[in-house]
Structure formats: C-alpha cells, structure tokens
Amino acid sequence: MEAMTNAENVVDKVVADFVARYGEQPGWVVRAPGRVNLIGEHTDYNDGFVLPLAINRAVAIALRPRPDERVRLHSLDFPEQPAAFALDEVRREQPAPAGEGWAEYVRGVAWALHEAGYAPSGWEGTAAGDVPVGAGLSSSAALEMAVARAFAAAGGWEWDAPRMALAGQRAENAWVGVNCGIMDQMISAAGEARHALLIDCRTLESEPAPLPPGTAVLVLDTATRRGLVDSAYNERRAQCERAAAYFGVPALRDVSPERFALHGAGLDPVTRRRARHVVGENERVLQAAAAMRAGDAGALGALMNASHASLRDDFEVSSAALDAMASCAQAQPGVYGARMTGGGFAGCAVALVEAARAEAVADAVRACYVAATGVEPAIYITEASAGASVITP
Ligand code: GLA
Image (cartoon, rainbow, N blue to C red):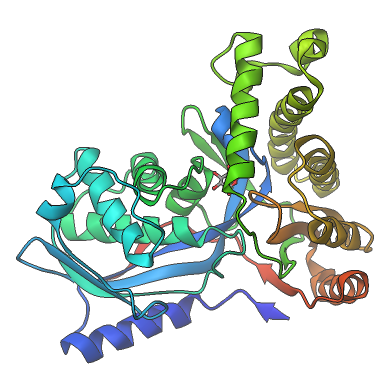
C-alpha cells in the first residue's frame, strides 16, 4: 500500500530545483495540502456544514522576493506551463475565465488577492505537488492556497485563513471558471494535524474535531476520473437554490428537518430529493462532530454510511465505481463506515477504519473492488495534517 507521506519529497524537490535555478537557498518554502471530506457533501454552497481533513499530500513552493513586481513560477509537474506575469497586468485585467491551464490558477490568485484589498508583491520560484490531479482530492485548492501562502510570505502579511480561502475560491470561480464552494480552500488554508475541521460555510468559523482514538482514515481511489460533469454540479446548485426559494430562505442551511418534513411535499420530486439530501446531510455533519468529540467511531461511521446512501439515492452524484468501492469497504471487519467523497461521479471514497487493521482492510477492499470492477484502485492511509504553512525559514 502506498503511504501518503510524500510531503517531504515535494519539499526536497522544490528546494533542489530552486537551488539549481537561482544558485542560492530560497527565502521561504511554503506548502498547502489537498483534502478528503469525512462528511458534509454538497452542503458548502448551501451555507451548511462540512467536516473535511487536510491530507498529507500537498503543493510546495520554494521562493524568493523579486524587486520588480513580477511573478515567475516554474512547475515541476507542468514544466511547459510556467507562470510569468507582471502584477500590474493582472491588476488591470477583468475576470475573464481564461481556461484551466496551471498558470491561470497562479494569475487568478494574484488577481483575487488584489481584488480583496491586498497588495501582492513580486516573487519567483519553483512549485511541485503530490496531490493526485483529478482524483477529487482538491489539488486545485492546494495550488491556490500554496500560491496565496507564497504571496503572504513575500508581502509580509498575516495568514488569515478565511480571507485567503475566499480569495482562492474567487480565483477558481471568476478566473478559472469553475463554480466550486468554499470547503476545499478552507480546509487547505486552515487544517489542523490529527483533526478534521467542522466548518460553518456561512460564517467560515471552524472548530477542530479530533479523529476518534485508534482510528485511521483510508482514501480509496476508484481510479475513475470525471468527464464533463460541471453541468451536473451546476444543475445540483440550481436545484438547491430553487428549493431554498420555495421555503423562502436564503439557503437550504436554514431549513430544519422538521420544517422539511412538514412542507417538503410541495416540491417537485427531483428537487425534493435534492433538498432532502442537503437538509439531512447538514444534520449528519453536526451529529458526526458530536460523535468525534465523544470519540465514538461507531456513530461517526454509521453517519458516513448514511451519507453515501443519501448521495447515491437522493442527490444522485455517485457512480457504479464509487458504489462498488463504498460497499466493498463497508463489508470489511474493522471498517466503521465508508462513503464517496468530494463532488462525486468519479474519484475517491473515504473510510474510517480501526488503525490496527488498516493494512488488512486496504488489501481486502482492493481485492473486492478488483473483483467487482476489474479496475486496480489506489488505496492510501492518510494522516490529518496541518493546513497551509511556511516550512522555512
Ligand atoms: C467539490 C467542490 C466543493 C464541494 C464538493 C461537494 O469538491 O469543489 O466546493 O461543493 O464538490 O461537497
């Protein structure tokens, strides 16, 4: 099994490249992690609750300041797409979605920081990451928050996680043109080692929730990747907005399960199912956080299983591969619960397991998944790690 402990390698790689390129040590090395969501799916854009953790895979950047208000960032992963631009150029540009090239994330974050009232200054350096791209582990948010961390280091400003997360989301929404919520950037900006984070996506307040003693988190990559599913994501968002309008509230966060039970019948059947997922999922997140405070792995796992069923049947964002992976995991002794994680349709599931049996569970899930689908999955034991940080100096 691959262990998710490559972060040092990414840091070593960017430092080595920086030294070879510039002939000196970097002024700073920063990193920002990817994430896996324990529970709370498709709730963030409904002003609801999520419970993700930062994984120990990240994007790292080694950098030094430049005196001339320019940014130059070389990527070891996308060497043909270096980011090289003048800050005043970006400042003058309007948010015209410019495509999803690697460099656009860097430019988009510079633009969004400026829009948010910061004064980004120039720097140059090297980036590399080990968050698998396209797997639903938020490699884009990791890049955005690493770039924001680099600007904060070079500009000498305090790391304000919610404001940095909002700038990253703005870059992704308005510059890159992907309509995501705030969860991925928030956990990458604010994650805590050994903890998940209960995030209120309306206020952006967050509270660390410790993993139950003796448990480990497995990331179960189905090795399937999303096609063009932005339209499905946007359609779900529109359905949720319609449901909120029906209830006369700003967002589905404001609909209690009781109110839904009383008045939900007036919605058309599809919108009703979508709303039922969001209303129920918000409750499950709050119950999951309580279970974590109580160290109750069994209760947390049961809520994860219920979340998967709701995403599959009511929100309809699972897939045959994700269902197979979740069922394979749920059937193993030593597994408290498992579910699809992230936007859906492909990518990863997540399982909460007994730490002592994690290796055996991973082997059994792999065999089960291969038998069910004929596809070889990638399975990692992950550690909850810290959010965006300056590693050196
Ligand atoms: C994607 C988005 C997040 C969130 C999830 C679903 O990962 O980037 O903002 O909406 O889907 O929970």
